[in-house]
Length: 163
Image (cartoon, rainbow, N blue to C red; front, top):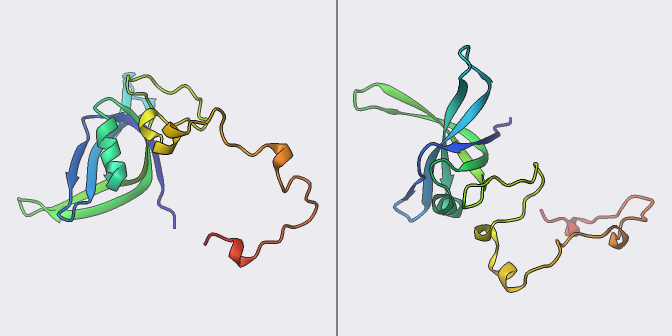
């Protein structure tokens, strides 16, 4: 069974960051995602999707996104229910995010990469990248590819597999 969601939209308000009693970070926000059509009156329609993010990603989201920020979310749908104060059952639907992508720079300009893999923003770079910046991406060159001239199957033992 598959339960995957990919969304792109704008935050409707600032991220709400909380911590569980055991100290695990959890953030909530709502993403406004435009529908691919307009109403009969020509108005853009949107869905307002509740998002939940956990741990370090939650803290990063709260630190770098705010109301109006453009974000991409990948995760899964989670449903639940609880008994409201009036005694009636209240049903909930949220997206639990595995990944939140910041699609604008801090000053609010969209990244202009047309869907290609983006370079990390300053807040996404690791400490080692600041200490040892690379002048070029670390890609394997074709002439350095050890499998480029291979004509048959490549032998791989169980010890070579990471899982």
